[in-house]
Length: 199
Image 1: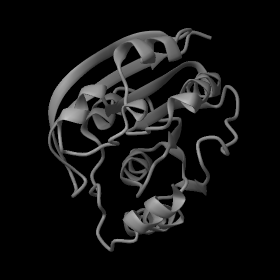
Image 2 (image 1 turned 135 degrees about the horizontal axis):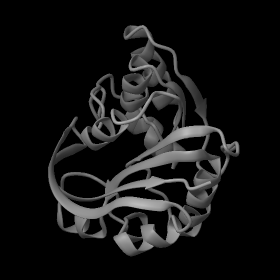
Image 3 (image 1 turned 45 degrees about the vertical axis):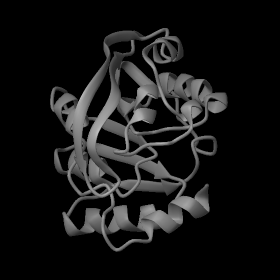
Image 4 (image 1 turned 90 degrees about the horizontal axis):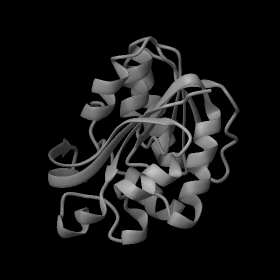
């Protein structure tokens, strides 16, 4: 898996673009800047946007190439991000630390997904929020991006189960048009979620 992503991110272009994900931007802008975690952050587009708007950003990805590009993007925009090379399983999720977590196309096998999601809940401060956009299982019918393994895709019921214990403020399947670089382009079916920690 690391080799696949290092090869993909070796392109000189930012393959998902340099602008933040639209849903992430829309939701993040509703909150007072604090400390933010971005798992599977890739080339840093969301991290850099958040840092530019006053957030203290921790981010990680399994790809060394992605990390290098994210750090380059941050320097070019005159912001600082704390970026670590780690897999979802390797990262040490500190308890009660984050005001927000952004899960933007953070796809992982179902065998680890619910465990990681529970760890992310524990990483939130009281009233901290999780902002999630990812490909829905129906995305298999589209060619605009995402895993081709249904086990790596999402649906509303699984997310509701994974994030039981926080207040789900928004959870819906949507058809959208993606314009996020070469690998996210065209009509797509996604699931969007906003959840808030209660304690």
